[in-house]
Length: 157
Ligand code: HEC
Image (cartoon, rainbow, N blue to C red; front, side, top):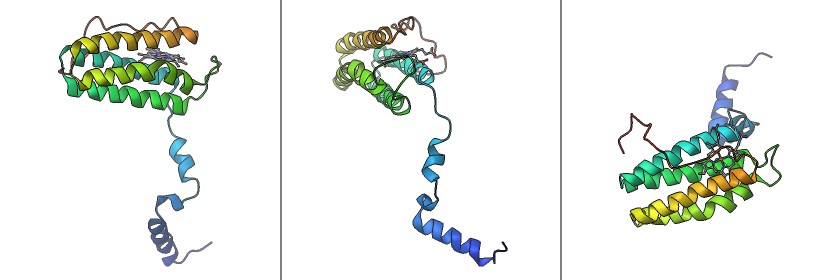
């Protein structure tokens, strides 16, 4: 088909008037990109978990609040992109909420209160909750712990 020069221009104008969603399949394309596996999101979660510890040790509460937020977001993504897991019977979002909602909320509070003692106590509870879910899902060989040294050579806490 031979289009007259005005046709593509009209199409462009229409598309911009209606917004990007005028393209059929736009949303499919948006999510058809790279989706990190649950293991990848967990590895990222583990980094955040470690950084949160060093933020709390330094009483850098702004950074600690940021890392708690990032943990929340990662957990949300884990449930959104991986509602089920081939080796796990329960829905992943239910498990995540069951194990993490309470300890993350308690950490949120400790960080807002700038209370280092409460921070440490609730950090250990969060760590225990990570491990409890790993054990419940037959991934208990992934053992989370307080970081024993700071591997982040390029970040000031
Ligand atoms: C749903 C319950 C659940 C909770 C809660 C949970 N995990 Fe996991 N975690 C998993 C599962 C399932 C895997 C294995 C995923 C896979 O590879 O398919 C995993 C894997 C991991 C791994 C191994 C990833 C790798 O590639 O080395 C780490 C590290 C990890 N989790 C850290 C954490 C941390 C830190 C927390 C707490 C902040 C946490 N997890 C909370 C279920 C959970």
